[in-house]
Length: 198
Image 1 (cartoon, rainbow, N blue to C red):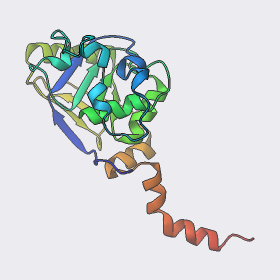
Image 2: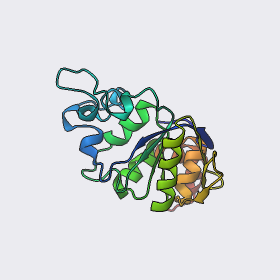
Image 3: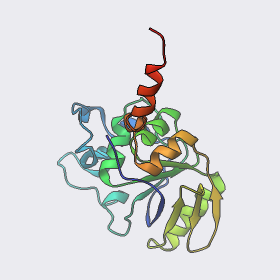
Image 4: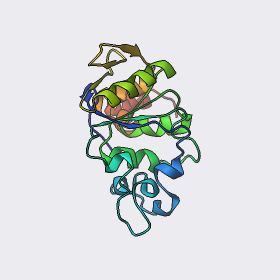
């Protein structure tokens, strides 16, 4: 399933300065019955967003109109816990295209890259700078430049580079998932197959 191409994203950000956010908090297990990627955004951080009677919790950041944008800034060790793909689906379906943290669980990072959410790992010091910038001005923007592999706080000009696997980078720049990548190579695969002995 193709997704939006990712090149340069300039957006305000939603701060979630909580460490060790696991996938059960991102999308509780009771919402994992669906097999398509749609609709999970409604239940992103469900138990943190809503009371038992489904009324919004006013003190949770996603219910605060002060904060918005396509970038979610989380605390250290974001996406730990079970390997459920649905956590990444929920982040994407809600509208986030980038998650920033000082450390990601490997499986969550991979699941994000597979569906078009860019996980940007920064130093603990730079993460604190981002949180401070958002606190000072919730309308301040963060620029995430995938071709250059940099993330910049536009208000201060502070910038840091980030790593990404070259294969996943190419896929994100083109809006490909793994199947799309193979499909675009169909003619090359067919040509290779004709040269193989049976």
